[in-house]
Image 1 (tube, one colour):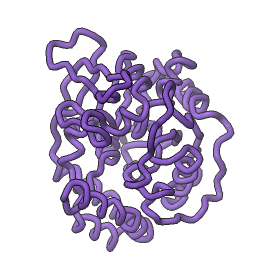
Image 2 (cartoon, rainbow, N blue to C red; image 1 turned 60 degrees about the horizontal axis):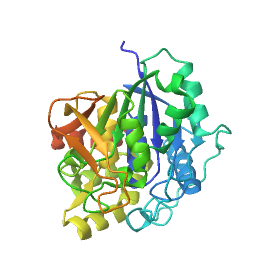
Image 3 (spheres, rainbow, N blue to C red; image 1 turned 135 degrees about the horizontal axis):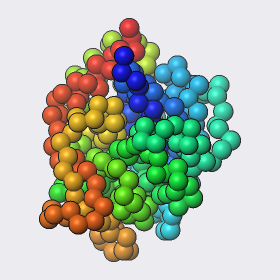
Image 4 (tube, rainbow, N blue to C red; image 1 turned 120 degrees about the vertical axis):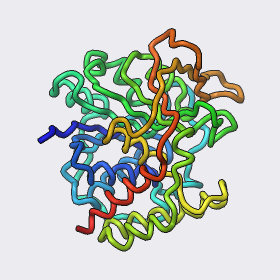
Length: 314
């Protein structure tokens, strides 16, 4: 039997973050051992409560949740994404409170402790929000950060421009200095950006499948997605939702889901119109380089998500 990959999700739930957590818990390939929370879609206190409640919904309140950075490394975040995710982050759905409490350790301490308890190179870390916590880990516990096997980050964009500004994707824009630190750190990073997430659309038919077959979890997940569907129709004119974070988790769960190319990436940390843009160099790699996701079988990725969420009803 193949050993399960130890997994950490660093997250700012967020509707698609909630789907990503549920996907990981439904996947036997990985063992979700820690969730760390970060500022982003909504404020830190809310992202932390949302993480606890999503784990409780899935019947896994035993997974520890540690709260991390409440804001970016350098400059305050000018706005959040409540207009997309709802004021509380989960599309207006109020999940039952979890019996679990927040881990008393700061996120970077909890993450460092976990990494030091595993063999080097065995733990996958999936940040699906701003990279503030991972950048802090690099600076505060570099020996622990060096033990990460793989970082699979949902963020950035190589060719499609941005979704929060004309230039920048939200997670990169929310803390460009942190993104620059992580992408230039030399860690084994895979950047799952808008180039592959935007074409990967979960339609209403797919949502209906796990709503009807995924038991209580599937029904709740479908309810959480309702506001996201409406927002996607208004913003992009699509009948469905773009599952940004769930696609990154799919790559973390099944490496090779995405076709990647090793590229040098620089993040614009200036204060102008380009702030947060991920500048992907298509010449030969001259620096550390990261794996940039460039293509995906979107239909297969959506089917993977729907099947795993449907499994909650079995």
